[in-house]
Amino acid sequence: MWQCNTLFGFSGMGIPHAWGWIVHLLFWAALIGFVIWAFKRITRQGSGPSSMGGEAASILDSRFARGELTAEEYRQARQTLGNR
Image (cartoon, rainbow, N blue to C red):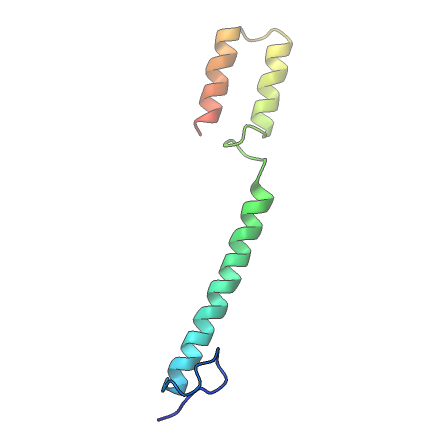
């Protein structure tokens, strides 16, 4: 039986060489996937409708400041944006 003697300390555990490569590929795929997910999560923070930091909230604030919206309309629109 083949053994993968250099893969993550599996030496002597009887893991066939083919399974060792599968484990190796799954590890790297998971690591790369996690890095991509973390990067997207970090760069997405502070923007978009969920954080109210987007362009829609800014337009809404401007319209309220100019008097185009009543306080009730403004509150309702902010709540609608926040629930997206």
